[in-house]
Image 1 (cartoon, rainbow, N blue to C red):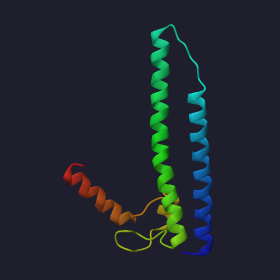
Image 2: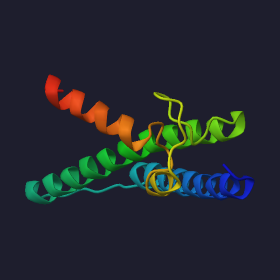
Image 3: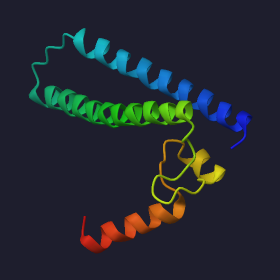
Image 4: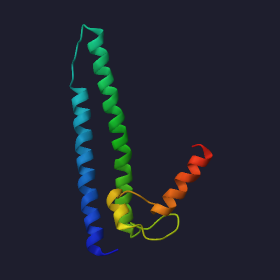
Length: 120
């Protein structure tokens, strides 16, 4: 992979990581400083539902943060863009669609077919 392509992904992943970390900080700050007292149980239930939804989103983002950090590590050690299964290059189009991927499209398709066959 060309140096300018690697640099593009490094910058993209770094900016995405920073964005997610800032959002996580904002969520923690917002949840610790809220002092709601709702006399209506329906309002309270709505608030709890919204909080649970927000926490599920942040949990998914936390998982993405870990994947981004691993992708940045792969950039540093020179293995970014190489399929972990077959060792072939992952297409630029696939990396643009999912820069944290570790499998080429063929290996990912095989993996998903196997999971489907096993009922996972």
